Length: 190
Image 1 (cartoon, one colour):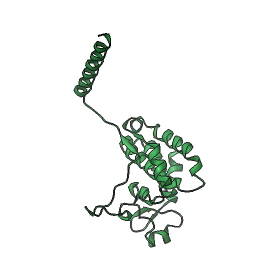
Image 2: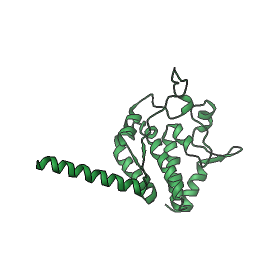
Image 3: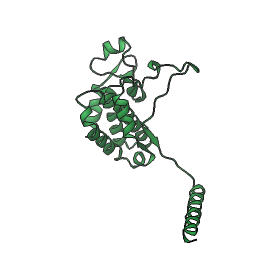
Image 4: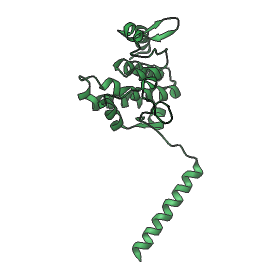
């Protein structure tokens, strides 16, 4: 998809309401009734909070725009939100049977930028559990509160960030692994 086509699509799904915001079909009534949060453009966190197909659509568009603009760091964070928005889209009965194919397609979009492919992974089981859970609520302010702490209850994140370690730590891990392996070989030979 060309950069111009992506920009056209984004322009069709955003509106100036004092500020530029994502504005999807039916949003006038839904936002007025506080069924979905207002998501300022280019924010994707609030798109995840929508918990619907439009949140996923917005995240995919932003991910592709970041790719086209060669904004690798932003691509990584926006593409993470693409997977966080997936459970809301999979709540649609017509999409749910195609969860694996949709997941693979989103992974292909993610893989178009090497940094995004390397810096995190996604747990499909968490995505599917959230999609099948009728009480799953990514919009923080709509979640239940913990009775002891009064904090909003956290939800499980399907995004698994990579662990980046220093070279000396990697060397120490290799040395420890080799020592364990040598000890095992010694026990086996005795």
